Image 1 (tube, rainbow, N blue to C red):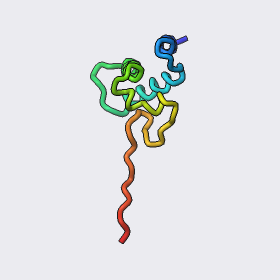
Image 2 (image 1 turned 45 degrees about the vertical axis):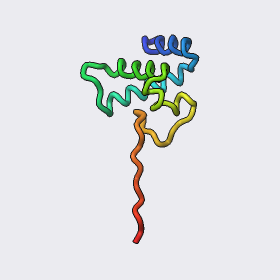
Image 3 (image 1 turned 30 degrees about the vertical axis):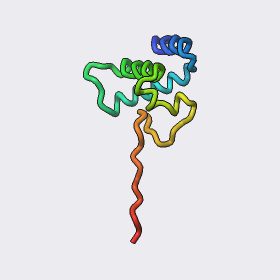
Image 4 (image 1 turned 180 degrees about the vertical axis):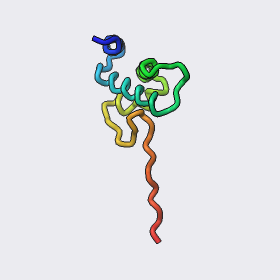
Length: 93
């Protein structure tokens, strides 16, 4: 068993969330580290675990990952949790 899995299991016990829910948020955190700006020196795994901690304690990630926490999959989100850009339809002449 990996350290990440063990840590997510411990957080699941403390928060009452399922391990699979926390794993989805963790994976979204890994994707966010790859695709968007991050603090210099922060490893992808540290960034992802910080996102899990923030989401479970009601921080900013709780708002971004609300679709996962509520058990819904949002079609308007990228894998890293950011909103997708929508195409604006122009007026036809």
